[in-house]
Image (cartoon, rainbow, N blue to C red; front, side, top):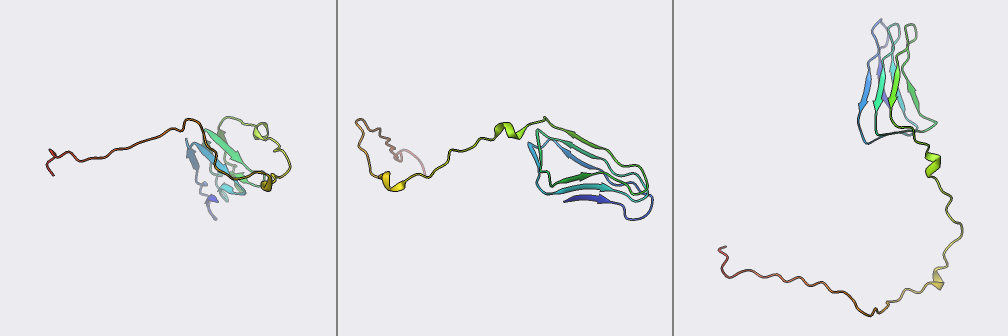
Length: 121
């Protein structure tokens, strides 16, 4: 939860600024910039990716004054386009033997390490 709030009085709510992270993810979270009699704070999010769950809340409000503004500057991405249904069924492990297999031309890697006798230590 990220919150700025003025309890009582005529002060304006504080602003919340999140600038240029790779991702901003709000999962069942809350971001509030609130005031009582003053103006609600502003919320500004500039991110390469902004993902908010339906259960999350972003609010810039005031009980008696003007509400603040919420600005989100991020590309719109439809996450449903990236979802795929995985094939069903289980692998029958007993049918897949875990054994070594010989190959015709195995590759090798050799690392030689030596200390030069001319090196002053």
